[in-house]
Image 1 (tube, rainbow, N blue to C red):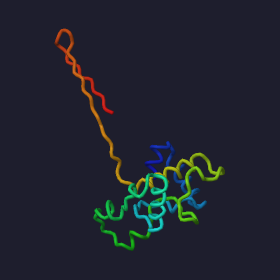
Image 2 (image 1 turned 180 degrees about the vertical axis):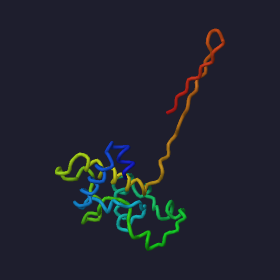
Image 3 (image 1 turned 60 degrees about the vertical axis):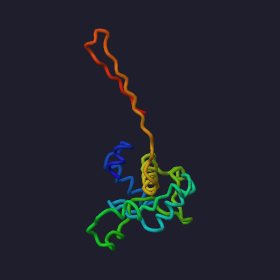
Image 4 (image 1 turned 120 degrees about the vertical axis):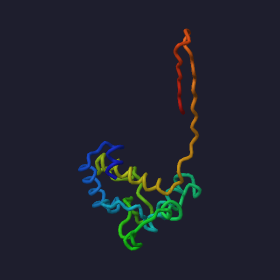
Length: 156
């Protein structure tokens, strides 16, 4: 949380933690002093709902418990793993996460941006990895005198 919010939002660590505490106290996020990547079943269900309804359907949902997390070797006991969840948006009474744009105007810009970061990271954690194509073009040229070779390269 601290690294990503500092890199993406330019917030200082004290401001990040103060803002996260404010979001927690107002019921917008789960407990933020954890480094766990575990999500409860109801949080996974809310994440699945967000992906299915807003990001292209069930094909874009990946049950992380059966993919990434199960490949990790851990020395923790299962009870200890379930004790703390990852930082995530709080689940609303309707079983979903509050959309970042639906947060009240009483929250300041930093709180809204931090919530949006948490929301995006939570949803993205249950989506398959990005697939993209990368093309590189190299153009080689030789000076008129023939003593200098120049290579231009671009990637996109």
